[in-house]
Image (cartoon, rainbow, N blue to C red; front, side):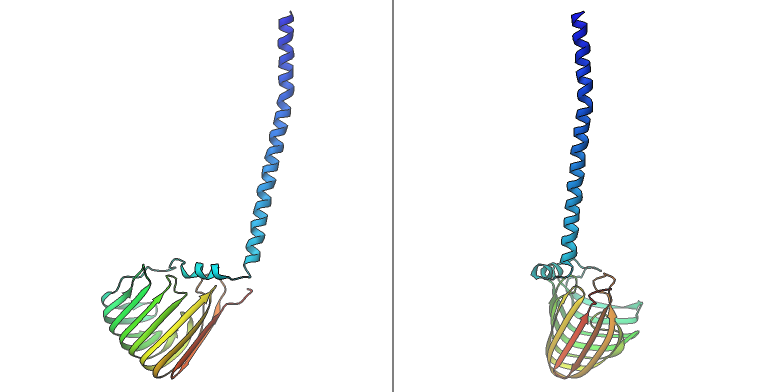
Length: 230
């Protein structure tokens, strides 16, 4: 009888402990859920606060961001023609392309023509440069190049209106960008006149950048500005 009584008492104690263990487990789960929610809220606040700032880390992040479109090809002899959404294009070059690993661009003894939304004729002895994969930053130089053109496909990637007539003996142009905004400055020995105005969304964030570009004789300046708010 005593043995049987002891067994019943043990079962009763086990039954009493079960609800307590379940309550502790539920309390621990609630604390974990609360901690996760607090961590998420903190990260969201940090992200919102960071939207209005742009520092050196953001600059380098933009510079080394992956290309949003097609990957470039290494420099090699080039000859192509065809029709795309902007019209007819044809071009030939002894060497043309961009080295993906270094970002170095080379175009030697080239000529091209296009007709449609952009109508243009251009030729050059050498165009050399370096650019980031996403096209945000670039430094390019021309040696004995010329171009005549007009249309809607602007040099800064915007769509609007442009006209250009130029002959360059030697020149260089640099572009830096951040969050859709960009600044272009160029100097050249030669002559010419160019201007463009348009819109684009180069970073794909839904905020449309307004762009303007002007060049007279020795100097070229271009600016694209993204609105701070929608």
